[in-house]
Length: 128
Image (tube, rainbow, N blue to C red; front, side, top):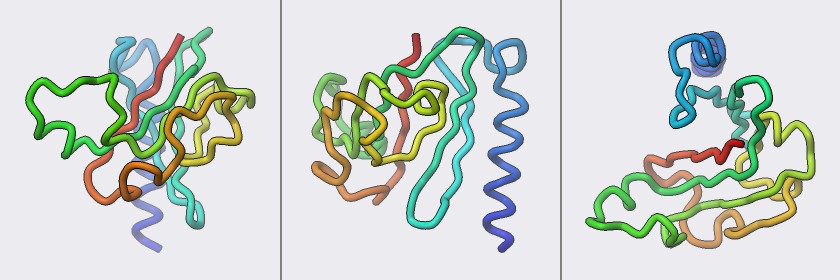
């Protein structure tokens, strides 16, 4: 029970300090909340007014970081990559990692390239 309380607290703190006018006003970095609900990992990316998520990529940050001159267009270390949300909640930043049903385009299906969350993963949100 304590672990879930810590996750909730971390997510709540991230949400409070990540608004556009607070700690991270950049379009390059966002603090976001993460929670495990059953077998699924849910994330929430707070967005500035008028912004929308248009793509999400989850990748093995450790493996990618060990390569020199890594090509960012490669999906070799990608766990899941989707674009063009069809569900409003996904466009607003409420994302279930690995669930492609909320998107028109799935470039990399979950689990097709790497083991899910076997190491340090990074989540990249494409925002407009």
